[in-house]
Length: 539
Image (cartoon, rainbow, N blue to C red):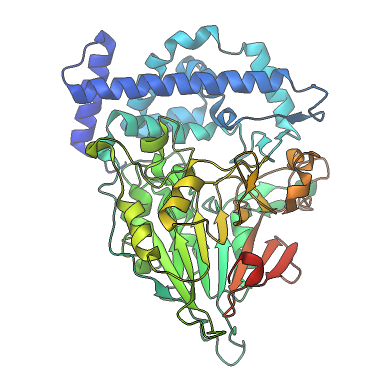
């Protein structure tokens, strides 16, 4: 059984009874109802977008067997499942709700609120056609998303775990971990670690970067029915062979980054089982992790209550989902005091506060409301303070993407971070999108390009296919690399690309070297380049 706050249970029971009579006793519950109605509308939009994508599957502008996606299609089947599972739930779902009263009530609440969406719902025939197409080998979206039925693919029914946990957050936001931890952000000095006589020390610090890696340890069925280790385990076994001085997770532990208070169908504690317990310790002060939309589905209790406070690995973060690292640059031409500044930022905690009820899918680092109560500037002020007076290149890491995956057009997160820093950063690594992509540039407005070197590194655990949208002539010249090598562990007709990770070496001349690796080869990076200080704009 999960460890549940009895007050939370009582609150849910009271809200559910008020919902049925459409009359609320207090402003708190009335506001929760408004949030849930907005979420119901969001799910309706998701469903319509998915239906449109499926209807256009044979469009001449979309390759056969592929889907053109929008950001909303990720939760496109929730409306159908909510209706279907009310009378014919899958066995795992019934077993889960029998053990978790909390999630059973969340399901009942959301089902009640979406009861009027039958008019837009796909028919059972359409659903079965989609299932048939998705079973094997699966449909692939323009960003590489696989609309298949395997674990963590887009039609995996257990994404309902994230949805119902999100409902709990909307009904009772006080259950979300709070307040936002904001200790003084002091940069930690970077240095290569001593490796002993058998392995030479790195001359300069090497940062290992894995994104969306919290998928856990399980087996898949591969080519010729062979057992294949989960992507997360294959990636981390390769990372262990690399000369990393630091290891940084860009966030996402699945399905909802839960702690004990949010029992899941596969795990009583996802953050512990799928992240902390499998983490390869790099040594004291050399492990870092970021918040994400999936950690927030579990009310942030997994990351804040377990990973950042109970685990010794991430103790250097002092319980905060934000960190700063620093590496000095050699004085040249009489210039002194310059350094690399690496910022790990939380793009998830304030996501819905800034962007609306969207399942924390769009990144933000805070808000700037007109009223004092609408202002959430803790993290923004932390960034402003640590960057004040800084001289030298800045590397940013976030979970969410600062630009569109296909067009590379920047978004609110990019604007917020640049404003807080005072200028665009030199380098930006993010996850969220399950792919590995090196962009030549980000697009700011119609006629401006960003100086920021922009990298997606979210392919640490989730299965993904060939991102055919990046081959479009209109954007192809902006893509220096993307992960599109078929994974030989799976049959040729299965659209599975190799998962991977990145290594970044910071140089004391102000430059850096980056390398993207794909599973199965720790010697030959799929992409690698050394950037000089001049190439990243360091005067």
